[in-house]
Every structure is written in C-alpha cells, then in structure tokens.
Amino acid sequence: MKTIRRLIYGEVLYAVMFVTLGFLALFFFFDFVEEIQSLGRHAATGYRLVHALTFVGLMIPSHLYELLPIAVLIGTIFVMARFAQSSEFTILRTSGLGPWRALKTLLLLGAGFVVLTFAVGDYISPIADRTGQLLKARYQGRITVGQTGAWLKEKQRYAQYAVNVNALESDGSMRDVRIFEFDNQGFLMSMVQAETASFGDDDSWTLTRVGRTEFPSRETDFARIDRATLDSYRWPNRISSEMVSAALLKPERMSTIDLFQYIQHLQANAQTAQRYEIEFWKKVFYPLSCLVMVVLALPFAYLHFRSGGIAAYVFGGVMAGISFFLLNNVFGYIGNLQNWQPWLTAALPGIIYSLLSLTAFGWLVLRR
Image (cartoon, rainbow, N blue to C red; front, side):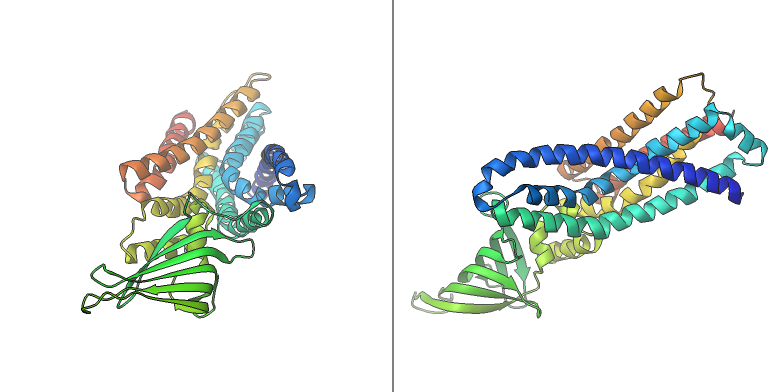
C-alpha cells in the first residue's frame, strides 16, 4: 500500500501544483494589467512598476486560498481519469485497492490540502493583503470606505461611544477621527475630533491635534458648552487595529481569530454581525471543501475512456470547480440578504457538493 499511496500522492500533487501555477499565472496577468493602468494616474506620487509588481505579488496568497479546492478537484480528476484511460487503476484494483481503501487514501491526501488551505487563508493571506493595501495607500491615497469612512461602537461601564475613522494611512495610523460620547440614556455628553490617531499598547488610542467639546448634562440648569484644544489626548478603549481594518477592508481577508473577536465586539455593542458571521463560518468550512473535491474526483477512476475522451471529463471538472466557487459566493450574498443562519449559509455549498460526490461514488463505484 505504501507504493500505491506514493504513486497516487505523487501524481496528484504534481497535477494540483501544475493547475495551481496555471491559475495563479492567469490571475497575476489580469491583476498586473489592471495595475498598469494605475501607473499613469499615480506617477506623480511615485508609484512605479516595481510597486505594481510588489502589490500584484502580495495578492497571490489570496488567490491561492480561493483556488486551492478548485485546483485539487481538477488535478485529482485528471490523475484519476488518466489512470482509468491507461488501465493503471485496473491494475491497482487487482492489487488490492478496493473502493473504500481508495477513498481513504484520497481523504488522507485531501486532509493535507485542508491544512494547507487553512494555513494560507488564516495566516499568509491576511498579512499579505494588508501589506499590499497599505503599500497602495502610500502612493494612491488613504484606505477608506464610502464618503465618511468606517463607523464603530464602543460600550463601556458608564458611557457609550460612536467612533468614526475616515481613513487608514500607509503606516497603520488613523486619519480624521471623531468620537461621540453618550451617557447610558443616549444623551450626547462630548465630542472629540482629531486629525490623527495611533494605536497604543495598553488598550488605548493616542489622538493628536485634538478638539474636544463638552455638552451640558441634563441635571444642570444652564446650557454651557465647553471647548478645548489639545495637542494630544489618550482615549482608553478596546477597539483594536484589526477591528478598524475589518471595518475598512474586506472581512474575507481577515483571519479566523480576528473575525471571531470582531464579531464578539459587534454583538457586545448591539451591532449587526450577520455579514461577518457568514465570513467566519466560510473560513471554517471552506478548507474542508478539499475533502469534498477528492471524493468527487474518485469515481472518474472507474469510468471507461476511449482515446481522447479524457479532455471532456477534465473540462467537466473545471466547470464543477468554477460552479462551486460561484455557488459559495452566491450563497454568501443570499444568506446575508435573507438573514439565514450564518453557519448554514457557509456550509450549504459544501453540503450540496458532498451529496453529489457521495451519490456519484455510490452509483459509479459501489453499484458498478
């Protein structure tokens, strides 16, 4: 069995690597063409060809995370179909490779791809994507969203805060920050405006060039508004840099732990977290789709091919992989709009393809 596993694993790994490199080269070309258009628009700010190449290179881990299950499906289908066409799989079956043992062999290989997909999506991709966005912001402007930037809430013991961050600078600092302080009954107590703000190491922000306005409380008999200008101001809070980045950047680029912490923060401050809960569960279930893909590819080893018929099945594998990617995104949007259960929304594409793969395995392998 060691020889058989070595043969299958070697062929599948080589095929998956070849497919992955082909897809990454294609995406690299498309991203590079798009960045070339930015060279002329931002040449005055110092944005050069080397910066465009660096940014496109930093986008590769994100593409790799999205493409790995599809590449696993296409590569495994190609190897299984080629084994069937050349009668190699028939020889392996006569050597003792039964259906369940073949399934177990591929599932072990799929588990390795699950670990690889999780590592890329949870550790490499978030760091690379954030670095790329900050690099682009250094030459093409700040990172922001909408007209006013990101809005966050912070609930403390005796007050509630609404925080507006207009943009993130390339060095990770915040620009044009506004903090509105409310009492527990919802009445405005103070407003702080700062040109810049940075994250401290002690759960606080350090604001510079600050304007602070204090409004009279409801208990006072006179309406007096106090205004003060400060060079710096320390505001203790539990809003981390990852939370601000989550509000300004795409949540699918965050790690699982950061997404979970941000969801906890939103729920603690009575904010909707549906979109981020869906992305969290997609982060959990998406790597497991590699197991579904290898099961879906196994029945191709039991088909009978004529000369040249393998290309049609490989093309079918490409279409199946693309349809899984599209279905995964479509269910995410529908679940967010229809307020479905986040875990079910994220798991549905995998469940559908699991049923398809098990049906194909039962019909083509066990019954025949």
